Length: 407
Image (tube, rainbow, N blue to C red; front, top):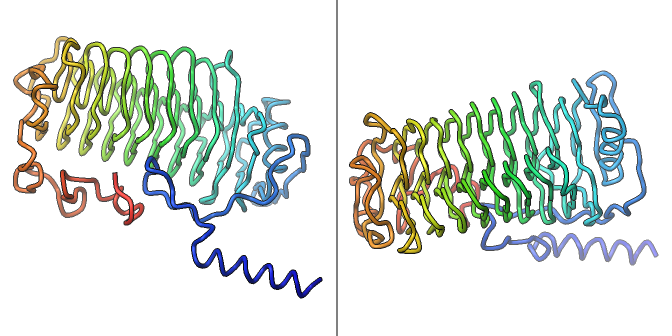
């Protein structure tokens, strides 16, 4: 028996070494070649085991799905158990086996994914707000280095793949891979539903995001937040204010971000922001066509106040031709004053679908051939931020995620 077990283990190691068990990722993965195998013991939907806890460091160690189920159950039974000053760290990947879970409802500690993955999650609270892997994180809470892969998260409003609502928190290096996020009202995001005074750094989404209003590939509704190094390739749909990165932006800064996900249906649609009420976009791009009813912009669908855009471009077309208020950079403006756009570009080949610019500052048109030349992008940093690819500039941080994949 021991001999046969040794042979099986040896063969398994050989197959893994050869890459046979390594998932290569779908067309919608963003720089993701996840080499970790799905855990061998999916959660049975019942068993709860208390994880190891280190009193000195105040750390819970999650080594299997029963431990994570215990963490969620304890939190849901008593909201005062919000793990304030505690750290929850994943030692292994866990598989929730598509069993319905509640997520962590309220959280003030540190959720350290340790570069591990939570597979096959199902969080269904269609009548509830603040729904996500973590429903609400606040008071300097932190979520970092975690991936969710496959499944569905459903709620009413403030629904996100990683966090439904984030206030005064920090979320870094998180990924939603093929987890559908759906909300029936508003503030629906592939990563965060509502982000207030939040630092979001390094986040990618390839899950479908559906909602009513304020729907974003990364954040549904962002207020006074800093959003950097984010990318979306997930399909987005809603009724109003749908953006590749942020659905509705209020005084938040967005930088080093990219959208290549389909945006369709509704009004106020933008490759980066659906509706912008002040804020800024810097070193960001959209390369996917956008389809809607009215107020469609390559970067911003509808700008209600000053929005500063710099070193950014749109390469995608805007459809259909009958849609109202289309612009290569901004679809529709309201009382915008000043020279607020600098070093911005749109692709000339799509002029028929882009329509007239929203203003004289709406964009510098260059043709498809010139999009491939660094010299045509005035004052852009091609040493550390951008790298010219076959068709257009790409952000280096995205290319560095996986040299075999690019957006």
